[in-house]
Structures are given as C-alpha cells and as structure tokens.
Length: 223
Ligand code: G16
Ligand code: MG
Image 1 (tube, rainbow, N blue to C red):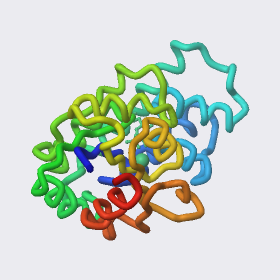
Image 2 (cartoon, protein in one colour; image 1 turned 60 degrees about the vertical axis):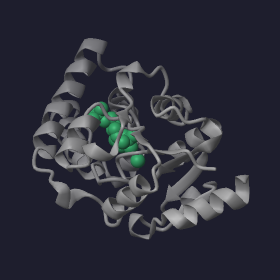
Image 3 (tube, rainbow, N blue to C red; image 1 turned 135 degrees about the horizontal axis):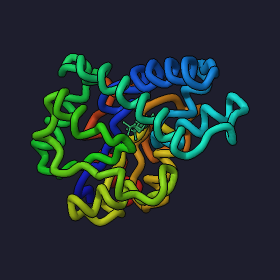
Image 4 (tube, rainbow, N blue to C red; image 1 turned 180 degrees about the horizontal axis):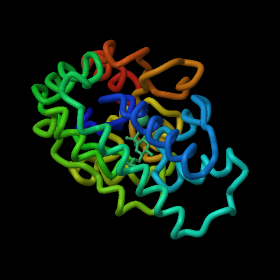
C-alpha cells in the first residue's frame, strides 16, 4: 500500500523552467557570448545550477574557458536574475489540478515531501501558498549527486519516514522517472509517452492527475 508521496517542483507543481530559461539566456548572451535556444533549455530541466552552466558552456564550445571562481560568479548572477523573476510568482502560478490533487492526498492522510534540485524551492513553495502541504523539503546542498541518481528521492522519503517501496514519486523529466525507479519507488509521470514511457503510470498533464487512479495502479502492480 501507498504510504507517502515525493514531488518534483519544476514542471509538476509550477513552471519555473520559463524563469530559469529567461535568466540563463541573458547571462549566457551578455557574459559568455553564447545564445541558447529552447532545445538547450530542455537539457537544463531538473539539472543543478552549476551543472546547467556546464551544459551551456559545452553547447557554446567554451567548456574550459573559465575558472571555477568565474563560473561561480556567472551562476550567482543567473540566480540573482532568477530571484528577481520569481518574486512575482503567486498561487495563480500553480499548475492546473495541482491544488485539488494536493488536497486529496492530504485528505487521504498521506505525507508529502519535495524532491527538487532547486535551492530556491522553499521560497517558491511559500510564494505559491503550498507550504502547509509539505512536511519536508530536501536541501539540495546536502546532495552528492543529481537526478537520475536516486539520492534526492531517497532523502525525500526518509524525511517523511516512508519505505521506498511504498512511496510514490511524481516527475515530468526522464532523469526524474529514472531516479524514482532506481530508488525502488512507484514512478508517476506527467508528460508524453514518447518521453516518459518508462513511468509506472503516466498522465498527459497535471490537470489529469487522479489519486484514485494512482492507488488502483499501485495496488494492481505492487499489491
Ligand atoms: C530545478 C530546475 C533546473 C534548475 C534546478 C536548480 O529542478 O528544473 O532547471 O537548474 O532546479 O535550481 P536553483 O538554481 O534554483 O537551485 P527541479 O528538480 O525542481 O525540476
Ligand atoms: Mg521537473
């Protein structure tokens, strides 16, 4: 039986990707002379801040052009810009269906925690007015590896004291689905079958998330 839920943030609860993209686009153009596009942006989703910078530098053929100190400066500049953009977020930025889905999970008595790679996650959850639903938020600064490693999902489940085999993870990215499954959890995907075909259960978008369907699929696959 299901004992708890762990959630990704970007792409599942809200769309922060557009703000990350706007901030990286500006820093990449102004500071690095690299023009990124939506395809590059896809590769930044769920990826940590410094790893995102490395993806951009690789795309621009400048992997070895900067010192660690310079890279830290650019990452900080991006984050300052990003923070100024997310200041405008409100509960209207919660993705469709998510508020009701979180309410249904709470009503059913399952604990929830957040498995986001973003160091800004607590601030965003607060801006969205969703703090009451999450018992815990993983601190990405404590992680040694990024998704698809299962570490972030294991920490999220540990924080709500649920055995991995009885924990459901929600994700919109392939690396996230892989991490959830590597932790032995039940992976619920939000997105297209061509991309997230490996998920244990897939919904086309957040508006279609349905707790009863998740419980039924979990029971039929795991008992
Ligand atoms: C999110 C975004 C990534 C971002 C990462 C780190 O991951 O998808 O694009 O680079 O967080 O964010 P920050 O710079 O705020 O620490 P997730 O795991 O919520 O999908
Ligand atoms: Mg995501």
